[in-house]
Each structure stands twice: as C-alpha cells, then as structure tokens.
Amino acid sequence: MDLSPVYVSFKVALISTFINIFLSLACVYISMKGRGVRRVIDVMATFPMVLPPTFVGFIILMLFGLRSPIGSFLDSIGIRVVFTVLGAVIASSVVSFPLVYRSIDAGFKSVDASFIKAAKVLGAGSFKIFFRVMLPLAWPSFLSGVILGFSRALGEFGATLMVAGNIPGRTQTLPLALYFYVEQGDIEMAWLYGIIIVAIALAASLSIEFLSDRFVLKKENQ
Amino acid sequence: MRKILLIILPFLMLSLISGCSPEKEEINVSCAASLRDVMEALITSFNEEDSNIAVTVNFASSGTIMNQIKEGAPIDVFVSAGRKEIDSLNEAGLARPDSITKIAGNELVLIVPSGGKKIKFNELPGDLEYIAIGEPEIVPAGRYAKEVFTSLGIWDEVEPRLVMGKDVRSVLAYVESGSAGAGVVYKTDAGISKDVEISDSAPAGSHEEIAYYAIIVKDSRHVKDAEAFISFLKSEKAKVIFKKFGFEV
Image (cartoon, rainbow over all chains, first blue to last red; front, side):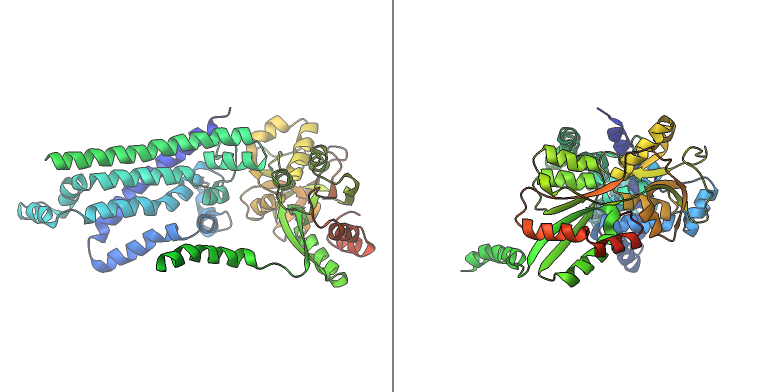
C-alpha cells in the first residue's frame, strides 16, 4: 500500500495549521484595536467558510496561475504555486483559517475583563497582556481551534484538487487518493484510506474532548 | 399540532424534489468527457427530429461512468471513449450485448499552451516540469497516452512528471491555463480551445485504436427510446455533425 498520501496530507495540514495559528493570533490582536477593524476582519475571516471550496480554489488559481501577474512574477523568481505542495498548503490554509480564527477569537473574547484591567494597572503593555494574560486564559479555545483547523486542512479536497492537482507522491493527499480510488472502482483501497482518515478524525476529536475535560476539571479544582 | 407539523414539514419538502415527474419519455445518456460539445449539438439536432424523447446528458470520464453503472446508476445509454469499459460491462452482464455500436473515431495529440515551443512525443525537453494526462485507470485518453509513452520506451522517464486529470477536459484546462507545459488529449479537444496548439500527433500504431462505442445498459427501462437515440447517432445527419467537430466517422 502506498503511504505517500498520508505523508503528503500530514505535511500539508501541519504547515497550514502553523500558518493559521500565527495569522489568527495576528488577526485577533489587530481586531482588538477597534470595532471597525474587528468587523472587517470578522467578515473576511468568515468568507472562506461560506464559499464553496471549489470557488476558493478557482480564485487561488486565478491569482497564482501562470497567466496572472502574481503567478508569473513568482515563477520568475522560481516559486511555483500551481501543482506544488505550496499550492496545497495555500488552499488548505485558506479553507481552514476561519475555524482556527473563530475559535481562538472566541477564547480571547471570553477572558474576564477584570484580569486585563488588573494587568493594565500593574503596568503591562498591550502586547504583554495579549500573550501573558489572555493567551493562557484562552488556552482551551486556542487548542480546539488548532485541532479543528488541522482536521479541516487534512480533509480539504475541492480547492486542493484545483490548485495542487493530483500528482501521486507529490501533491496527492488522502482525500484525493480516496476520491480517485472510488472513481476507479477500487473499493478495497478506498476503504483502506477511508479507515486511515476515520482514525485520524477520531484521534482529533478525542483529543479535543480530552483537552477540554482537563481544563474544565482544573478550573473546578481551583 | 405544532409538533406534528414540524415532523411533516421535512417530508413535504422532500416531496417537492421528487414530486415533479416528467411528462415526456426521458432517457439518461452518460458520455465520455471528450464528447461534450459534439453531443450537445447532436441532442439539439435529435430533438428537432423527435421531440417526444427528452435526453438528459451527463459527462464524466468513461471509467467513472462505467463504475457508476456497476453501482447501479440509472443510466440508459453509455457512450464510452474506449473499448475496455464496454467489454468490462459486457462481461459483468450489465450491457445489452446486441446494443454495442461503434459511432466515431478520434486521434491522440500532444498539446502545448498557445505560442509555446513545439515539442514532440519522442523528444520531450528535460525542463518540461509537468505533463498532463488523464488518470489512466479511469480516463481512456490517459490510457492511450500511457500506451504511447510505453511503446516509445519513455514511460519511466515521463511518469514522475505527470499530472493526472479526472477526465480529458481537465487535462485540457491544465494546459490552457499554462499550469502544465504539455498535455495529451484528443484532436477534437485541442480543436475547441484557442489557448492550446497541437504540437505533435501520436505515432501510428503506438496505441490501441481510439473509438467511441455506445451501449444500452441492461437495466434500462427505456430500451426503445435508447435504440432510437443510438440509431440517430449512426445517421447521416449525425455524421455531418461529428465531422464538423473533427471526429472520424
């Protein structure tokens, strides 16, 4: 059995999760600057979730294809997006970003304002409050956002097929391999890959449960 | 009362979808993706002659349709771009054996984005990063492409550079957008696009004969209408349309 789709999927999902963590934290930080900024970021962050992934893929293709100014510029400095792992990473980052951002944002919003006030009174700057006070308090939402985003990135199909194509061993992810095995009528292989995906999904949702349980218990014990 | 309504409502919604039964006789035709444009023209012409049969058409790779038929999809007529899919259905007892009809032929070509450097099957440049073909297991054009590369003895060298499309039209799209530097499609696919150029034709005898076959699926409940449609595909009127789109008849 060819395990390269598992490897490619993990690589793509891991990298896009890291990108999304940094992007989300940055967006949450910026959105605290004011109500107007927050509206704009909220709308933009929800967009990839409400659009069909095929349309997201199409837009990425239009932006980064060789016929576009951005795509041809990147190509001239040796960066290809279409048909590469980079393309798969961009596609799954964009599609899974809303889940990560929403979750982390909700965690930061729920932080008790008195802690922030106290930190301010004690002379902490906004950057320090963000990372040393709010982030630890928002930790459960942060983790569940990361796991949700990772799982969504792992399962990304529509945009990935359009941008990264189906290159066995290079850009063929688990969902793509599964799709092509079903199309070929190879039910056994489809089941095998399906079981791998179920195992990963199960592990992800169990770890969300486990982590949230742990934090709830901790809080109750305090 | 409200609770009952809440339970009934979803079923009412469902009946909205399933309720609209067609007045006319309707046949479901599933065709190889390479037939997209010509089949639309053919159906228009067929309905000018016989407006009592409504033709619903669907396009996918021949291998995909074959598997859908094996899984029991309600398809009446299947037009395949290869003999293998037809034989496989026939062996499985899913085709009406007397219905197998050869309707047209095609040629395999190597295409490049318009204005690109002309290349040949047996002289593929080393800096050509991506070559698009159909997934050989489900796309006949991909299978023929694999046969060509294998008979030229360069399959091993070409394989790591392949991008596999889900049907022949997605291969065309990959080359049209310049994402892939070259691709293998039918001559008729290359003919419908302004953004690609034919760079080379497959060497004679390097692949199995490319022919389109129509069959009636065993479980079809509209055999008469399906027969009428297939005999239209063999008519002189249909031949003119096939020729117009570059097919061989």
